[in-house]
Length: 489
Ligand code: FAD
Image (cartoon, rainbow, N blue to C red):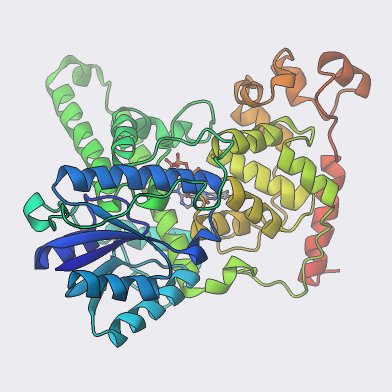
């Protein structure tokens, strides 16, 4: 018998570890609630994970098997289960974060000590750390070069889920109940967390590949245009496989060829229409694929630099002297800064355990370069509230915003939160959705909130805060803070 240990791969289809185990013989699936891992969790993610596990268990039951649920230290649980069920080999998919690697090394050792074979395979990203390097064999520190190679590397096809015959008949096994969120020591999240599980992920992917993917390049920066996939928590928990996602994007490209072929025969071609559409749509799909590659890039960065979880990737000459004002930090967390687009984003985070990417960039820039607060504070807050919190992506995003990360985001590039709001939410629809105090205020006034008088602010939206800082002043302070760190002064 083979044991497949599910971790961040809460799915049956396109699961390399599970397929590898199933190839060798009947496979039994297990999930272990590990207190050391749960210590880094937060209510939205625990909710998402439990729902995904319930769906996965139902899938196994529909196929005559079950998901064994255990609670404890995998170093003890897995050898014990191996003995209890007469397991020949334990298989799992690699996790690339520093803590997970330490844990996995300890589990490998424990299984070796118990004389149980094990196999660890690569699954969560297309190209394993070390497989995309500079010509000198070093990991990339600049995304553009990484992407150029990533896109040309061959991608594997999705793996088939195991058949019922490849699964262990679990009718006589005590597979134990799934715990409730309370039993795991968490409250229900206050946020309305998006639906978990493979079915929900596939629905999102299918809907996105019908529509959003073709206008992704143009619309992805606009939070009200609904032009991103919302797959991030699914990618984090592996409720859908990366090959399946990529395959769907390639299918969207093929659908374009079919459409173009139809147009070739029709009137549009003779009228010269359609010619311009295809490259844009193709580019749009590739723009989306390049976001999938960002995820892999940051995974590689974290793999080769596990210390970036708490340290700057890019070191300056001196420490950055962050101001770290606790009241300003609190106002940012609560969405009470008096900068409408920032407040809308921070409130979306609390309400949905999600925030649009453009707005993540704006709020992160605001925290680090307007409030001069250490990116680690922002990262910690995101960890607490995001359903899709992923160590590599979250860290990469924060360090990019703080100009301490891999890619060139120079310290002097400072977002103006008002012009960002005006550009990406011109009608203030996103802002009004999350900041009800501003619902009756015109978009123009909202985008001039920092310029109008206190009297005017109190007249049009008495319950909404005045800006807590002056952007122009803070911009100058931020520049001198970074210059000092660089040793320029
Ligand atoms: P889509 O635009 O549909 O992208 C598809 C997928 O590509 C995403 O689901 C994600 O897996 C990946 N992706 C997209 N953009 C990025 C990116 N910039 N970096 C890495 N991967 C990307 N993403 C997370 O998954 N978890 C995080 O904890 C996280 N924290 C972030 C923090 C900051 C400060 C910033 C600026 C960005 C962060 N991102 C994070 C990246 C990005 O904001 C989200 O992946 C994206 O908003 C998720 O929405 P989506 O699934 O609709 O994305």
